[in-house]
Length: 185
Image (cartoon, rainbow, N blue to C red):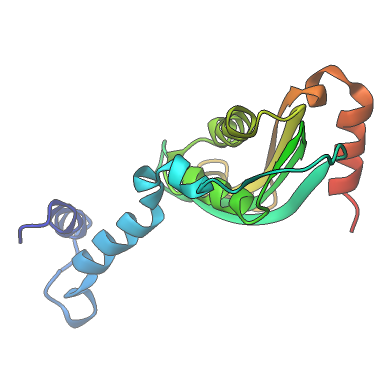
């Protein structure tokens, strides 16, 4: 077995007291390695290529929001999943970005070993740096299986984080409008 992830998966199975040769587990090391590569594929994402020059000059000055962006990530502390929704907004300053780039940005950072706080800041900071808008707001709501199924075992709790940059930080009215709009159903 040349693949180090497959070898590690085999070691994990044996360490758990399992027989990796039994029918249901024979291909598990390969499947685990492939799954880990897929759910951590964000390490291979080139942010410049992700945006692919999809910035457009537009004289639009109001808030742009993409909300309810589903994401899945792995907690770097336990390597257990956390998942939820991201809400991303910005106020343009002479140019906009293609809307599909925002969920792709969320996915690029979510598909790494993460903590929710850093994930929130990476999305906001990158959009702010790349687009140079008047401001960016990001709110993430997530359930963490490291809290839900182990440790405290609280099945109903979720975590919320936010990052507010530019006018989202300095202008309470802008922040309040953003929070109000993402909570409309």
